[in-house]
Each structure stands twice: as structure tokens, then as C-alpha cells.
Image (tube, rainbow, N blue to C red; front, side, top):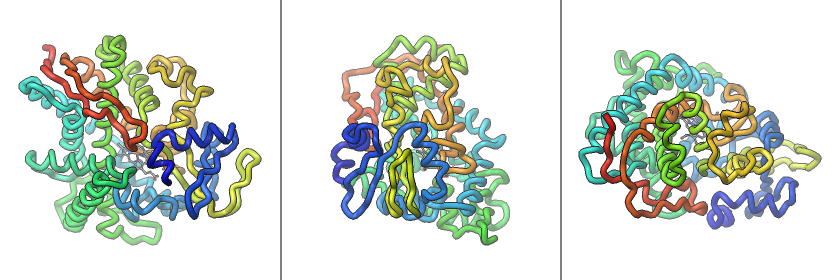
Length: 402
Ligand code: HEM
């Protein structure tokens, strides 16, 4: 894994380049690892039943980003059932409500930004999202607790790909929030605590294939699987501010809030900027992909970052061009910032529609704000996973046009 820590997002693309089109064998001590990329590879990765998630995700990632016992590491019928719970909560009528509440929370926050000399957009966006998603999910938080919750949820994401202090901060944040939500789930199994239809009610009531309710800690892990990634949408808000600063010509059209353009912009931000580098599964029997043998036990990695910048899929892949998403429909195995395939049967992110809806709502609001961008470090280092604009995007003199 040394290569990953040294090269970050470039790790798999560099290995694949050397393999000259063939699946890249990646050197990881004690493991046979193969890296794949491209729509055909994505279809194979998501449809091949001989690739399992159980045992494929490294412990340090489980103990920070995902949590133990959650949907990410399930296979077969256990996965289908757990996944259906997420899809019901995230894609039902309630999703529109989350979008509206996010818009209100953003507008209220923007009024306060206008009273301050400067703000760090990444941090502010994480708080707007935490303030919105917690009550929506059935988790009551006092206003005084919002900043701490947002910081912990951001830490869990920020620390999964590093070894140093960020990693330990992430572990502590997860342990703290799992304890907190385990207690809440336990209480929610009594009357009157979990509002019907919320994520809290869903995880408290969910039954696995054997007919038993989830262990309260696993239910807490699943509740965090709603709260944490919703707050992580702040990465894309900060990336958008970066894009608008670097290519200001896009601002006017985004400001007009034509929903089709706002959605295309959201897709281009998710394609262009690096977030999840790859996903992985374990070959549970000998497999074959495109004439290459993948022996049982191999770790199979799908290079998401590489695929989102593949020149055969995306002409001028390092150009930021939202219009590319107005020109053609994108297939289920092409744009993969949140995985590929069918979210009901495979592991593709069940929160993708919600992510795009939040971005469609928030990005035009960002474009409508007036502000100055003072000198700062806006570099997005590709060796850091997950990366982000180093300064968090500092804005000065924010003005909300009437
Ligand atoms: C899975 C990315 C937002 C909930 C995933 C996966 C990725 C991803 C790469 C793994 C796909 C795979 O294993 O094949 C993102 C990104 C987001 C985001 C970049 C934007 C910040 C969300 C939201 C939610 C969510 C808003 C819920 C509110 C989940 C869950 C899974 C998942 C529960 C596990 C699915 C499974 O294993 O079947 N996401 N996601 N994500 N995501 Fe997201």
C-alpha cells in the first residue's frame, strides 16, 4: 500500500499506464491485487457475483469511514435487504424535504456570513448540511452541538486514507458518534422517540434476513451511513467554489439556476474533482475478465478516479466542461464518482440522487453570492486522499444580493 500513500489518486492510473491496457497487477505485500478501469470493467466489477465485499475493506477504513457491520461489507441477500432500507429512506418522499431544508439552512447561514469579515466555505457548508440532515434523519441536535457534529462527521471521511493524526482523529470521532447513536437507537426502540419515516426509525426497526433487529451498534453504524456522507457533500461545495474561481465564465449560467444546467454542473464537479479514489472487492473464486485470469483470493480494485478522467470516455478529461453532460445521456457504468451499476442490486451509492439534488439546490445559491477570494492556498494535492482545496476556500466580504 506504500504506493497508495505516496501517490494518492495517481496510484492506480500510474500502474495501469505501465500495464498498457491490461488489468494492472498492483504490488501490495501479502496480497494479489488487480486494478481495473472503464465501463466494461465497471460492469464486470458490479455484476460478477464472484466478487464479494466481505473481507475486502481494510480494517483502518472500517474503523474510520464505514464502521463495522454496515451495508458496505455485506453480500448477497443480507446486502439486498439492508440496501432496500437505505433506498426507501433516501429516495422516498422525504428526500424533497431534505433538499428544501438544506436551501433554507443555506439561506439563513448566508445572512450570517454577510456579517463576518471572512468565512471558510468548506467548514460552513459542513455545518449547513449537519444542521439539515440530523433532524431530517430523526436525530435531534441542539444548535450548540451542530459544529461538533459536523466536525466529527467530516473527520471520519477526512481520515480514512492517511496514517497520521487525521487517521486517529477519525477513529476517535467514529467511536464517539457510534456510542452516542447506539444509545439513541436503544431509546428509539421504545415509544415516541423516532419519528415515523425517518432514518432513525428505519435503522431501529430494520430486520435482517434471519428476522432479528439490528444490534444497536450496527444500527448506529447505518445511521452514520446517512449522516456522514450527507455532510460530505461539503467537499463538492468547496470544489465548486474552486471551479467558479478558476473558471469564472461558468458563474452566470449557474447563477440563473436552470435546473438542467445546475445538474450538469453537479455531474461535472463530481467527475472532475477527486473524492473516492477506488472501490474494492475480493474474488471468491477464479475469475476471468477480458481474457485475463483473476485467481481466487485476489483483491479487485475499480479505479473510480481513473475512469472519471479516461480520455476515451471524456474528451479533454482535465478540462472543466459542465456542458458535456447536456450533450449526452450517461450510462450506469460511465460516470462513477459514487460507484456504478444498479444501486438496488449492487453497492452503488444509494445517496447519489440525493447528492445531486442537494448540489442542484446549493450550487446556484453559491454562484449567486458575491464575495472576494483573498490570497490563499487553493491547491488540491493529489497525494492527499481524500483531498480538498488546502485553505478550505476562504471567502471575504460575503454579500447576499437582494
Ligand atoms: C456507497 C460515494 C453521498 C450513502 C458509496 C460508494 C461510494 C460513494 C464511492 C461505494 C460504492 C461501492 O462500494 O461500489 C459517495 C460520495 C458522496 C456520497 C462521493 C457525496 C458526498 C452519499 C449520501 C448518502 C450515501 C448523501 C446517504 C445519505 C451511501 C451508502 C453506501 C454508499 C449507505 C453503501 C452502499 C452499499 O454498500 O450498497 N458512496 N457517496 N452516500 N453511500 Fe455514498
